[in-house]
Length: 149
Image (cartoon, rainbow, N blue to C red; front, side, top):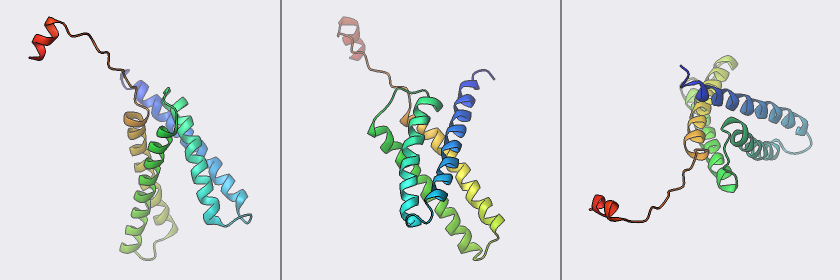
């Protein structure tokens, strides 16, 4: 069980960081209501919260040294895929049941969000914030040339 402890700890940090940013984003969205069109406010909050969450995930969730716009672009792509998945889940629900209850709607949305959250965790950990090892080039000697042949 001890071999899974770092993975579980990283996942818990991921949930706390992502959940905290999500709650803060919700508050900001409410505060912006009426001050600008909701579509614009949502886009602004989504971009800013994705940048903030990416920084938190890199530094806290995964304790990675990776920084820069490439990391933000990769993380942003996982958000776009998550958005497409949750939207697809809701559109499928509406196609199957045109007038679902609020509870059913929320169940589908939250289930799809949970699945995409797990998917994002896996991709961010395995790809975006994965530890990179620099390839060390050894000089070619007789042994390495013979082994390569």
